[in-house]
Length: 176
Image (cartoon, rainbow, N blue to C red; front, side, top):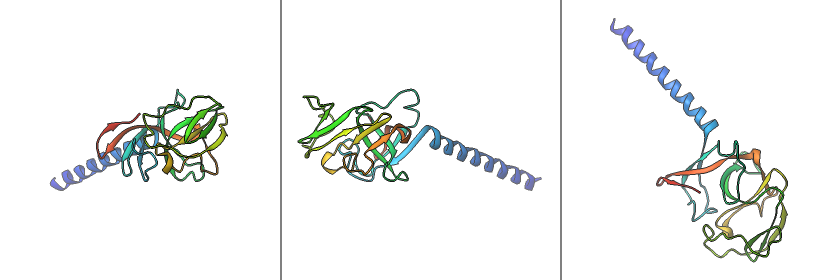
């Protein structure tokens, strides 16, 4: 009697563990994307070593907007995931002059004072963003391997895995 009871309890625990593992796998595959930040390219918004969760459902009915922080497959090696800020939208022309970003030959640069805290340097572009694609830049402009330097400078919407949502390590904070 006691041996049957022990076997039944073990089977019940195996079932609970299997269901939990399947739920966790489904959550990670379809609802969230987990990311660890390997570099200083998004500092001070996101620090090296931070861990965060992205929302895979954010762009089901919406398109990425300028300023969104997104996790995506790196265009030059899709096995790697990158996290950057959306700067150029489909059909726009992005130009960087003296470190400042201009969209479609505007006389006024983007106001990025909320997230770019060091004085950016350099001239880049112009980059004509194809339809269905986005131009990405890191917040730490002078230390970011982003669209300006990639062999394939644009991230297509189907390669965006999710919108950065919450940092859970080292402390819990909402992103964006």
